[in-house]
Amino acid sequence: MASTFRAYNQFMARKPLAGNVATSATLFAVGDALGQYFEGKEKFDVARTARMSTWGGLGFGPIVTVWFKVLQKNVNFNSKVATTVARVGLDQLVAAPVIISTFFTVMTLMEGKSLQDARTKIDTTLLDTLKANWMLFPAVQTINMIVPLQMRGLVVNGVSVPWNCYLSMQNSKANASKPVDKIKEVAAITA
Image 1 (cartoon, rainbow, N blue to C red):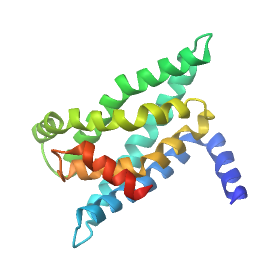
Image 2 (cartoon, rainbow, N blue to C red):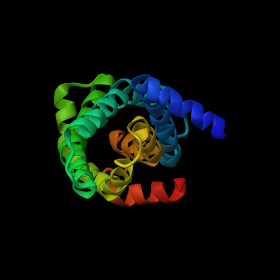
Image 3 (cartoon, rainbow, N blue to C red):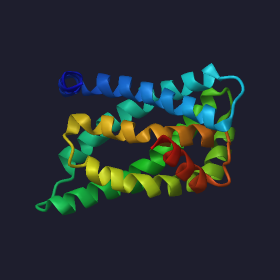
């Protein structure tokens, strides 16, 4: 196991974009599969999982690779605490709303729906989704900001399996009125 992790770490140091693309695609697919399971789907929706995996690999993976590099290079203070607080603040108050809105837009379009449908989905789900995000990710990102840069995508993706499950369920409108309760339930089951 240690040699596998070492090889992965070396690969991520050499090819962070490729590694984050592959990791994100895989773990978004896992999150969606869990979401479908928790929804009690009688028939597994392969297309839905493919859409989630596509977003993970072609959207989220590249975005976080670039975002973490931008934070690492441009947000630095004399104090490690100030640097971490600033990075987490920017991540949660700037990146999270943009990434989540982009997720809902891309998913809606991949479902064959219109930009107006995406706008409606964002209007009805963004605030609740951000609230659920803010229950989980400030703590995760605080720890993540001290992890080596090439491993930050893995940390986020690893913690994100229950989050991706939740996002998948939000996107499919499963229990959209109670996202905070659902994320707690999913996190408890997958922990």
